[in-house]
Image (cartoon, rainbow, N blue to C red; front, side, top):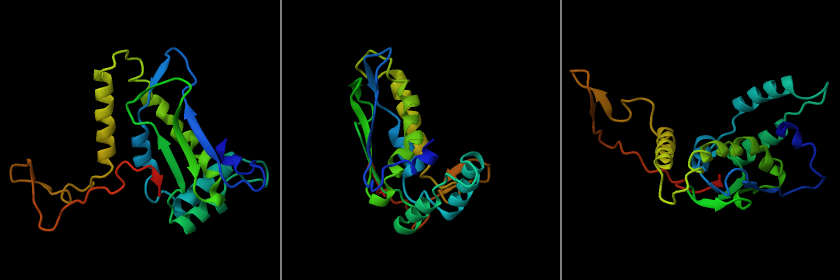
Length: 205
């Protein structure tokens, strides 16, 4: 479990550089897809807070560890909170989403940018490997042109990512019901949503 790996690295470890690949299987190549959503949904901005640290400590130490050996790395997470404002000090690089790549090639790399956070690189593995699931949809298509399945997957991922950027309150979004109960757009003076500045950047923070 990644929750205990931080104890197992050799002394004086400062950099951990990891990669993700398709080792092979039924198909000779794989279509890489899904990383953008994972990054935007879970890894962008301040993702570490004191409340999350407290909650994670209770859960992990209740299920992992033996006796007094508690596996939750509270000191490490508090360091990220205090020194990096809760933003994760890692850089993620990847091939373009939708690209079809022969098996046994690097699809994504992760490396820590703070020597004290060497343990963080592989701690993120459990989350990042979830990219396997969206990749199973477009990969089987032998047609080099965009398949309906890929187009649908891309549309759904875009919609999910966009939903994370929109305000949950309809009134704040400039949409209010009219007298008939139908939703109508309302233009508010000075209310303009600025475009996300993170764009397609993978550098965190």
